[in-house]
Length: 610
Image (cartoon, rainbow, N blue to C red):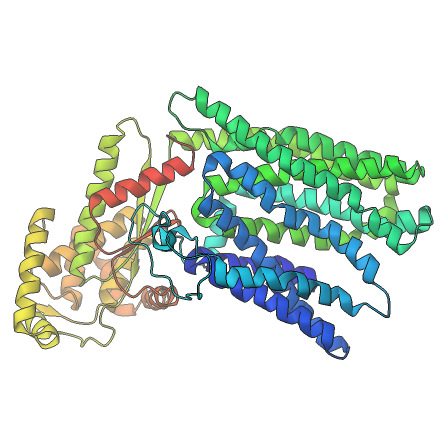
C-alpha cells in the first residue's frame, strides 16, 4: 500500500504544482510527512494507526520529490540543468540506500520509534526553510522571477501569488487524466519512463535480495547488511555528479558546433548507451557471483556497477524530459516516478518467486538482457522520432467559446491571423494546425429568445452598452468583422449542439459551422436560437439539411454539450475565449496574433525544432 501511494500521489501533487505553484505543494506535502512521522514516534502503537499514518508519510515524501524537479526546471537554464538535476536526484537515489542503513541501526524493539523521530527531526528544519525562506518559482506565476526578486531571505508565506501577465511565460494546462495520458502518448516520454522503471526495478530487486544474500549466504548481522547499501550509494552519488557535468559539457560542445545556436534535447541521452551496458554487466555478474558465493567485495562491486548504470540513465532521462517540456516538468517526473515505483512494487512481489524458479544467475541475467535490449532500440527510435518532429509539428488548438460571445469571434480571427503570420515567417515549415471547439455558456440562465439590445442595456446600462459597442465595432473593423447589434439572443445550447454535429464530420467542418453561426448572429442579426436559422447556418457550412433537422429535433448532441460545459467549469474556466495549444500552453481572451506566433515558436523550440 505504501508503494502504491508513493506511485500515485505525485501525479496529483505535480499537476497541482504545475498549475497553482510549487511552494504551496511543498508546504502541504512536507507538512504531511512531518506530522505523520511525529505522530508515529509519540502515539501508542496500533496497526490501524500505522497504516493510516504511513499513507500520509508516503503522500508527503513522494510529492515533494516530483515538485522538486519542476523547481529545478524553473530556475536552471538548460546549459546547467544536467548538473543541477544530478544534485537533486541524489534524494530519490540515496533514499533506498540510506533508509536500510539508518533503519538497520534503529530497528530494535527498544528504539524503533526513533526511526520516525529521526525523520521528524531531519525534516523540521527543511520545512522551516521552505515555509519562510523559499520563494515561488513557477514560471506562469513569477515569469522571469521579477515578482520575487526583492523578496527578503525571511518572509511570511503568501499562499496566493498573482499570475504572471507575460505571455512568454508558459502556463501549464489544467490537470485532467486525459492530459497525463497525452504526456505518455508522446513516444520519447513513454520510452524513457519505461527505461527508468526497468532500471529501478532491477536495482530494487538487488536491494531486496540483500537480506537473503548477506544474512543467509554470508552470515552477516542486520546492521552489517545495512552497511552493504553504502557501496551502491557511493557509486550512485559519484556517477550522478560525473554524468550531470558530462551531460552539460556535451551539450555545451554541441551548442558551439551548431550553426543555428540550438541543441536538440535528445543529445542528453546519447550516453545512456554506456549506462545500459554497465547496468546489464552489474546485474548479470551480481547474480552469478552471489550464486557462487564470491568474495563480498566482488559482489558489492557488481551492485556498484548496477547503481552507476541506473544513475546514468536516471540523470540523463530527467534532463531530457525537463528540457523537452519545462512547463510540465513536475508532471513528467511524477509520471516517471509512478511507473518506477509501480515497477519496484511489482519487483518486490514477484522477485522471490522468480529467484526460486530460475535461480540467482539466470534471474539477474534476464534483467541484464532487458537492459541490453533497451539500449539497442530506445535511443535510435527517440532520435529518429524527434528528427521527424523537427520537420513537421501538428499544432492542436482547443478553443472553449460561446456562440454569442463577440470576443470569441474576434479571437477566432486573430488565431487565423496568427497561424498565417507563423507560416509566412517560416515559409519552409510543414507544420499543420487543427482546431477543436468546446462549448461554454456566458449566460446559463438566458431565456429562450430575447431582444439583444434590450438585454445588453438591462445588464450594462445604455451608456456603458454604447461605449462597449463602439469599441467592439472598431476592433471588429480591424479584424474584418462588421458587428451589428440588433436581433434576438438567448440560450445557446441548441447552437452548440449544431457545432457537435459539425464535430462528427471532422475539425474543418466544425470550424465552418462556428464561422457561419458567428456571421449569422453578429453580422446578419439572426436569431441562432431558432431551428430555422440553425438549419440555414448548417447548410451554408456544408452539412446535409435532412441530417441537420433530424439532429436538432431529436436532441442529439445535447449530452455531449452538457458534459463538455461541466468539464470547462471543473477546469475553472470562467471566461471565453480560452485557447489551449497542444495541451501545454493556455491563452485566455482574444489575444493579438503575435501572442499565438510566440507560443507556436516556443513549442517548436521545446521539440528542438529550430
